[in-house]
Length: 358
Image (tube, rainbow, N blue to C red; front, side):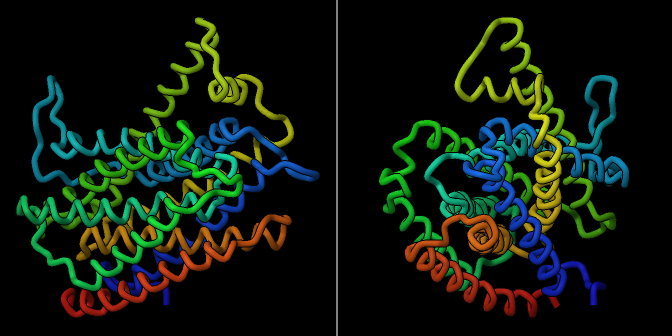
């Protein structure tokens, strides 16, 4: 049952199931730690960001170091000063830096008041779906990708855009469009820009690997990218602490970060770190879906993002059932309908791609 062939539909389903389960845990955890009222930690969003990001980086980086996935089978080595390094590092390292932007901005989007988990997921995931289609168009024109994007994939993009567009026109729970908030705009823009470069790099790597390369280099890519992102996040955190403690830099979102590191919450910091580990596990499934063998960036991005969108609905419902949160609104169910229609088109595209793969 669990033994599947690389590039098969069965392998893809396994990755989606793992992604779904751990993203539901992530979505529920964020709302639990940030909710106010009796029995909830009512943790500051930036404070939780430190703990959850630390937990995620710990589990992801720890696994790749223990399993030694960082050994890459390079197609060309180059001289870099006294070192002879794999040429792939020239773009994997930047991808890791962009990942270091994606990780905190993802959690931040969930932390803004008045933005539900479902709304945040639809906005981010829908936009990334569009990026995947743009990357395919660019790489087809460059001659990097030779595969065809099926019309079913394009239709799925259309319905994903309908879901995103509806949210742009929908007011949030506080009666105000979330994009009137400057912090939301900055966070969302940073997330999208970083993901654009990252998706291009992942697909460049996937589409330029020669057939004779035997090693599973997706694992190597993930390991090197993850190590880079962890180092980047540590350097960024260290810089913030230095500016705050030595030069007195302060701010509404900066102060909780400093507090989380210097004097962590005695009651909840450890459980918050544990909850962040679920997001670290998500990163494995996310990258392996994005880089799935024999699929376009449009298809892989749609599968990845639609899975997390459905997980967003599930996390909202579970939080409402067990923690007294709000159930999805009527418009949320309409958005889910658009998403399920997109999934239907994706299933048709996968049947065609399965024949092509064989």
